Length: 245
Image (cartoon, rainbow, N blue to C red):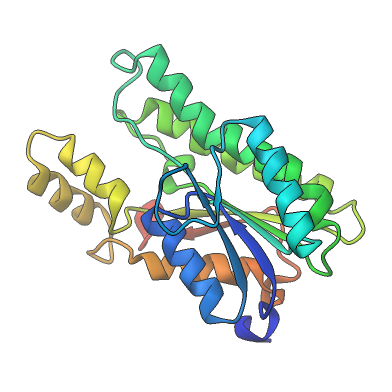
């Protein structure tokens, strides 16, 4: 069963759609005949709906709009996320709370308020973007590690509750390593020597390069599609072998 055969005309809401990964996911959904609903902060170009994922009222309004326009939601991709470098001592409480608000609260609110519309789909699926940093720790990623670890286990809880519904709502997490694009650029630029930082990231990956956005998008498409119809509560690692070491 191919991905392209099962996502045609499916409505998929993607958060963080103005970012590198979100944009790649929307393009991939569109390429197979799906209908991506692009959401990001107000003012970002090319968005269908402005959405601050940390705001409960914004999620309620967004879901009401999708129901009016489409009557259902087939897929939700929680892709919005931020990373702030710092160990536990150097991370300010304000930065800690900001990372948790976007990376964890945003996923929680998305899963919560999308659920009624997902239940109107024939084959609903949620995909949460976690990270290899949700599986292994980093000394300089205290807030980010905590947030992506939370996404990993929240995904499992949603999968178990979703399995009890009719139709079942599948929920899985994707765990990329370093991906070419905006987030790794921001991490590198925060370092004293950006070029050295990028090379260090590449050396960490056994395949010797960063992931391409479309490679992560392909993993998301698989989890949205009927090709993964018996997959829920799982972690799909797209890391070039990083966590195998």
